[in-house]
Image (cartoon, rainbow, N blue to C red; front, side, top):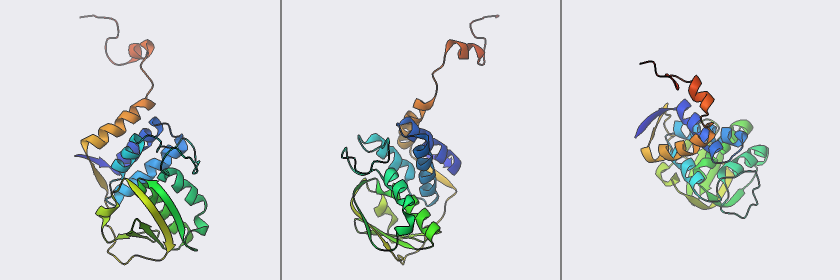
Length: 206
């Protein structure tokens, strides 16, 4: 396990999302989402790595009607943020969502924006979001690769709030997968950059 600060988590997730082909705007949203999940003690880094690894799950646009695979939680989250005022007025139902954990940060932001608590049912697992705290009877049940049905409704979930964290424990495998995508954003070294870098370059004065 690797111990990361929340700043490191956000930066790594953002670069990984960008390296996987998302726009910088979507990559920033991914970074913020993973940071928020990590602050709740939830496996945001693993959820993002799994999302990026699955063919057809990582969006290059906000087309929610794409038939290439399950609904991307990042694209869905951004779309739901744009209609935050309508959430909590009745039931909103999503079907066939990949890595549903990544949807929660956007719904928490919507609850905070509107001042309305939301009750989110993810294949029967209930999560309460009030804009400040997260409640869930069994957080371990949220670690799922796919949700058949998500129902977003007004109301609360009576359960102890999740404790807040200032750092995240990330497995070596998850970090390696995220860094593999992140490295795609780095410019390849050129002969000029190598000569300007540290060291003797092409000369040898020894």
